[in-house]
Length: 234
Image (tube, rainbow, N blue to C red; front, side, top):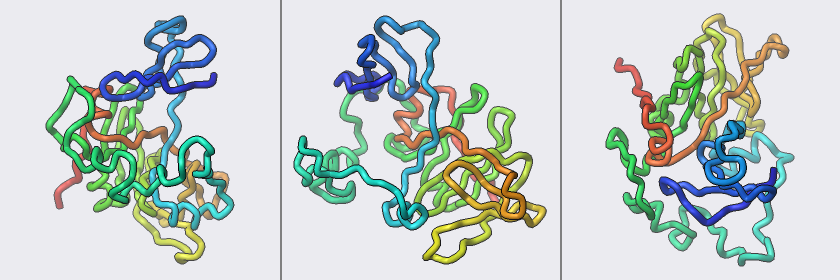
């Protein structure tokens, strides 16, 4: 399917439409809600996401391609870095308010706290970005599955843990960008975009888990039963 932006919102989150049937879809859930495909049971697969800096990304992926800001549609000045005060939505990002009404809210976190959201076997949990920054390796379980959330290079990634507990094992130097975890048996695992890969046994892989980087209000609006990760006290 090919999708476009309808210009309509639900819970302050945009509705997409597919160009074949013009059905409206929840962008956040990947489900059709109004139109020919509504109630069809179709659900788009959620893919893992990494929100990081260009510096760290290109270091680890030097052959990556880049979407050119010379689009021929908008001037390149429209694509200023988010931290630039003249960037699009700069005032919105600095404000504590949402641009449009969001009826379902929770005060457990600040409205625009950034979270990494995971849903496994029907159970949802939000991992606050500021907590992940302080705790770069989180060993956890969700929906009956062991997992590890790793925050390196400014981005957080979640992987299956396969019953292991991990600690950060360093990297091969700033120039390479390759980073590793170590499990309780002393085995090193390379952190890749697709999986944790055993360095002694490359056939051993712990797959990446689907995740979403979101504002707290957006995650909660679509996952009202969500839990919030809290670090264990010393």
